[in-house]
Image 1 (cartoon, rainbow, N blue to C red):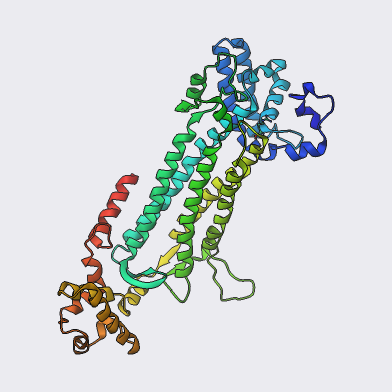
Image 2 (image 1 turned 180 degrees about the vertical axis):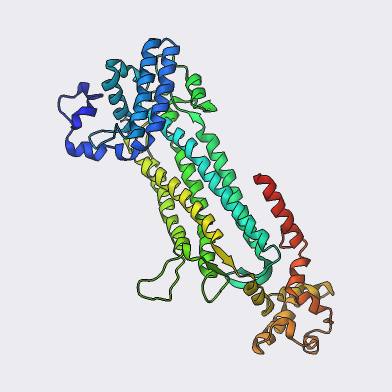
Length: 461
Ligand code: ARG
């Protein structure tokens, strides 16, 4: 069986490829997924060959019609790829020749599988990456909706996962909006560089046929053509960039997933996920596990793995095309699909999560989170900040020792720590006031947070 597809390049060979070598090198199981792109690219190439007079225009029409039939055959399952085929390019060309006769072989005039595969991958990414963009936008919309619902809810903000200062839950959620917003920017920047056609570079040196590269690029929706034929077939930066963007998206998702896991513990009690996104334990009947968030966190490893895979495959490869590069498909498909699925899952998970703002706000009230306000208060009264910090530290130590929240310490006691303290300090110890008082741009001040929500909504509409 192996001999069938080899026939397309077997002229100089007297023996057939060993079955083992065929199995080892066949990529059809992975690149078969690129059939739409492969056929689109071949149609554009054939049309250009006909219009430029490189082949007869009727032959070009025959080839195009044949390719259109094959597309329908693949779509409907009449033509299926099997393991005897080497790759998607040869499988389709061979089918074409079966259908329209030897004229089918003219489709490969002035072309190589080297420019063909680079073209297919670029077309594929141009088709699917907008889905990631849509996934990011949907996730941002979901975050904005929750931020709006909880616009004034207080929560303890953390550094080192230790309670630090009061913030608005909405402000916390908007931090994720910023991350995913940058991901959208990175993605469109990456798409800009994918959007260049390698078709016409042929094997790597170009070809003596007067191909019209601009014409095929335009028909296929590319903004421009790659300028160096060697680079056109040997570049895989576009894959590495795509998978880096995916890795950063996954890293962001993992931070959010991890917070959801932590927040839904009994210890925190800040969030509850609905039954539709949680699972039970086969042994512990009381369990309700946040598996969707954990899996998202876990899938990051796959995507980072894909990035390292591609970087390693490309490291030190001499110019131009090398067969090593065939190994690029599995990491590309897996990273893009995993990222798309994870974005969809996290938006859904957020929708299915209840945020317990009463609990968060109770935690803010009964603690030491406004200690920084005491230091700032004393500083405003002329005490150097370092000294104010020390006095406040003593007050905090007192609160801890006596199991008290800061606002419950009597004025007389506080004045024992500093004569500058007056009764107006209590206003500053109120977490709500602390949040309202924030004045620097981008802070957790509710007026600013509201304005940010409005700005993001406008930006996305
Ligand atoms: N299946 C190959 C790949 O994915 C296509 C290019 C093969 N080129 C070659 N000269 N063998 O990279």
